Image (cartoon, rainbow, N blue to C red; front, side):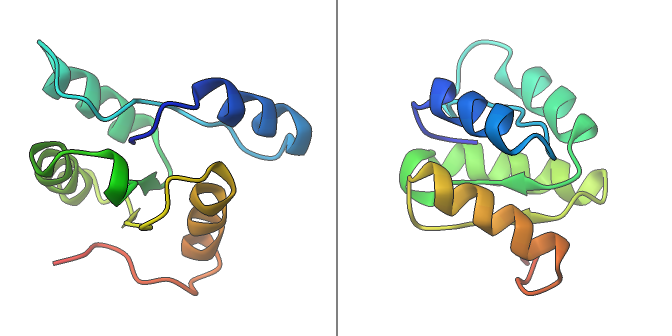
Length: 100
């Protein structure tokens, strides 16, 4: 969640082919909570880009991640590679998740 490079995420997804990126720009809009809930329920892991999301988005997604027991990580970078690497680290149990 967060960022503006949806196309870059999709391109990297096609190149690597071993994961599927569910993208949201992190901007709160009308009915965003319902959209966040659908995405979190589908996700195996949530990557929340700190530099690209509002606090409101972070709190809402954090709450949903707990509700559905989906690991969440918070990289500081906005970069596509950093976001993907953060998710990989969660799956390899090298990064903490379910932040308090």
